[in-house]
Image 1 (tube, each protein chain N blue to C red):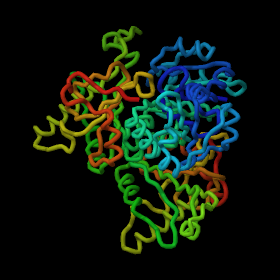
Image 2: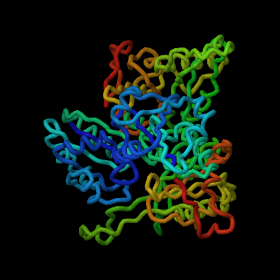
Image 3: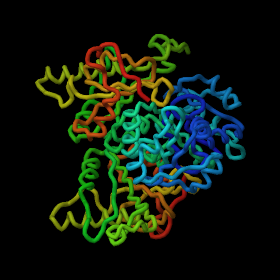
Image 4: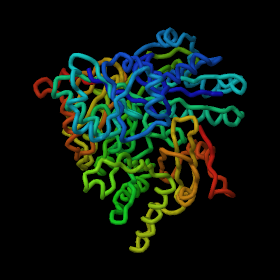
Length: 285
Length: 285
């Protein structure tokens, strides 16, 4: 049996009791290492689970799926995913590959950022399509995701923006020379995402358009959702450019405009103080 | 401290290790009993947690929040919610009430139907606004949610339909006579939801409109997501009217039209056989 097990969002103890039982009984346990991070490392997980983990990065999952699945028809293999197993498409790949080999699979779900963002008080059913904001480079500055944000806002629904993660990236030089030397991991902050959004808004204005999302649009910045030191800050997009939410992972929500009174009241728990919008944020669980 | 703890979707062992630790250390533990159900009852939870649970229905949470919060400033009180604590607005109420009383709170997240539906292979970020389908009565047959489904479909995004749950409802007679006698719980099935949708489509046609969602629109019916005997069936809305998915809880997805090849391939694992669309479904994890 192939088990896909969600680890949740915080630390080693966010795995479910069912998930932990399975991990302890499997013959091999892989840890997906490329779409997300917990606040603790592989070693902390290994110590708590009492099992050694095999790191599987994107390359390995795509190129060596058969190695991962080897023997899973006669023994149990676990594939651990931060959050829930159905955040990234690559896990569909693994399931389809298993199914073709006649290997049964089971999913043990957990919280993912897709539902845990509800902790800020915005109602989950009022979120529209989710967008991803990627790091811009000198030559690649995609803006097309902004159409989805505008469409959501026009429909009065919130937009969850997933912020870019660069793990195990090679520099162009190392890539061309075939050297497996990797850059340090990079995680987009709410500040960087807001900066790019503000530039896109400016670009729209220069083309004579007045976008539905502006500097004054109410946004929510979230950091390390589900962890002990989680932070949430509600304020304008302009304020998101400078709010300090600490280390990764960050997410940004662009609200849909008309909020329910309960949503407003919850957000007020996390609002950035007027006088210190450049440096502070509100700690919230 | 007030702890809001998600129980996940399947059975007693779907609580997280962190959540279980907290439950075992709290002075009182409440179990929310009105928005959802696990496949096991209160007794199974009590046995596994080693704690007695106090059932809290909607009335009690709204009217006796202060009883629930009593002493939570000096001891720990847990409030258990099936799925994740941020599916229903009433939990915002409880948090706001706690905050006003100066009681700190923490959330221990878990899977909810809002993210676990990803198990059918449809990509979570491609879901639009979520809708609720309620039981029609002789005099109340709301259709307005269908506008959201059409808007989502028009934007090419999927719609998760949460299906009605009637727990602790009183008959009109008992309500008027002030008798606290409750009707047996009712859970809307995928069949019933599809039937209502088909009627709405027919009503649109009678008004001369050709709706974007028709009998042939690809849908996914899900039952008991996260439980051992979970079922998923992919087929047309017409097929959803008769597919047999077994007991509650059910959910229905109306797809957004253009699917990614990986989404198609995943759905094909769950497709209703052509020859037996009236009685069978495909069992899928």
